[in-house]
Image (tube, rainbow, N blue to C red; front, side, top):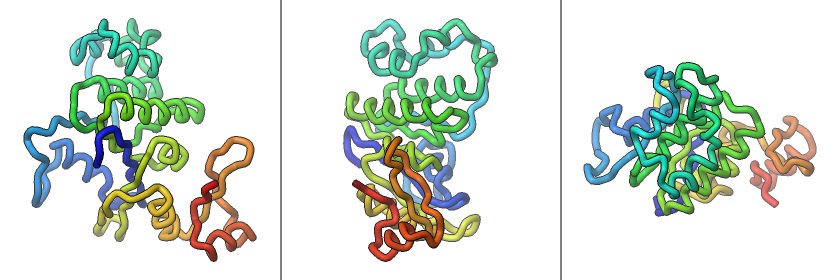
Length: 228
């Protein structure tokens, strides 16, 4: 991985994507290999639950200087936190808690940031903003970010490259090396046997009807994920 790079992680369910990032975060011990001790990792887990009744402001103040201009520019303003500051963590909705969890992860000083399912509980418009903010954060801080998500539109907007997991669900999983978005998406979607087009109006990925003319055309050309 490179500085300032966002890498998406995709694959079928139960292939080990979450286990992989947990190992990088240090919450799961690998059978072999290790993350170097001098690498600081910040991790947002797949499932978030409020661990206290402290306010959002107090929670952020415990991990960073919330008055610093860099925090306001990179975290507070992009993730629209000021409106939540006076709220307690246990009063937040699922989407609000997700937003706070992502922002907390990115607010910590780290060498590598890990985000597992950051789009969960967020509506479509918020997912678009979220993906763009994460990508911008990586570029502005020159730090690498790993993002696991099942929403291909989020992955499409956030990732510079892809790690594709293959294997037998609940049996064994294999993580390929990071590869280009085009090669990664083609490998992932060809394994699923589905093709995507890009909606002409919204620009968002849409699944082609199996057996349709466009589906057959893209499969015959090896382009499972349509790119302009």
